Length: 346
Image 1 (tube, one colour):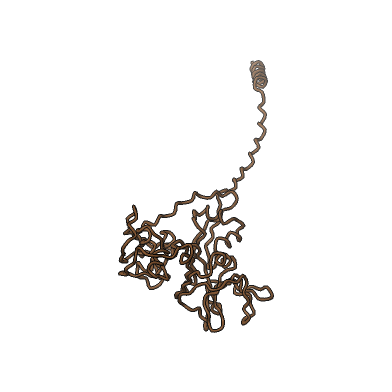
Image 2 (cartoon, one colour; image 1 turned 120 degrees about the vertical axis):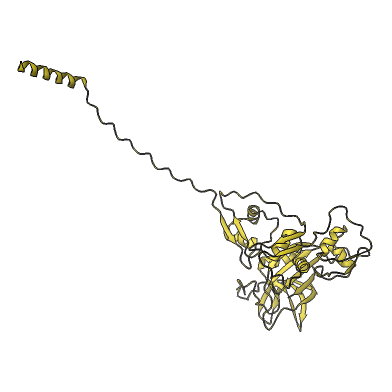
């Protein structure tokens, strides 16, 4: 009985071994290679404008074109200001769509962090001096965040220009450019008709003639250079349009640059200053100081070829002249004519 039971048990175990096939272990699954992060095509460089810089110099520094920087920042002209943050386009970083410039609508503007009076003036299409007058500012450099500024021209109603006959009495907030636009004329014509040598200087209550014989703006009176010693800055206007805005260096003690109203009286491609043994490229002579003529010119060059005062633009360093960067001086020299008005103010 025991043998039979053991035989049956062995037969059952054998049948089970035959029916159940051994299972081989599955081959290990190789891990997929890591996925590399795609390069960030949206990276961009931000440049903060420093004293003495302009778009041309910034473009050279980063190896891009001036037009590329203007497109990336929605700039309608070549003017930038100290502290302005600029997007520098790089390969693969698409430039943002340019924003439309704000039209000169007048009214009030609240000063934002980083803004300057010249930047606000450019935004609204008016001059810095017009903002100074409209707001009774002691200086073009003294504005603060949160300050509300009157933008000249807000009281003017667009539409058909009024007839240019009779007279007009200057009111608070007026500028010569806003009056010219209102009466369908130009700043140069109004200035000529009223004997105004500085279009930036009109005052409340002043009576302006709106008709009469005027100088043709094409032959004189249309171009005007303004230099502000307190700002170490030069502005060049053609009529009421700002053409150039450059950082300069003026005279230091004891040879300060003289204030007053002058005109370009000489043009020399490369003037020689025998007193100081220097060359002065792109010379525009503006007034005499004793037996020497003072003027506007590029950074001076020693006979050895060394450029003086490079890196000091924006600080009084000269012997009385108004000094610009070489590229800026060349632009101004080509634009200015003999007889172009030059106004120097503190």
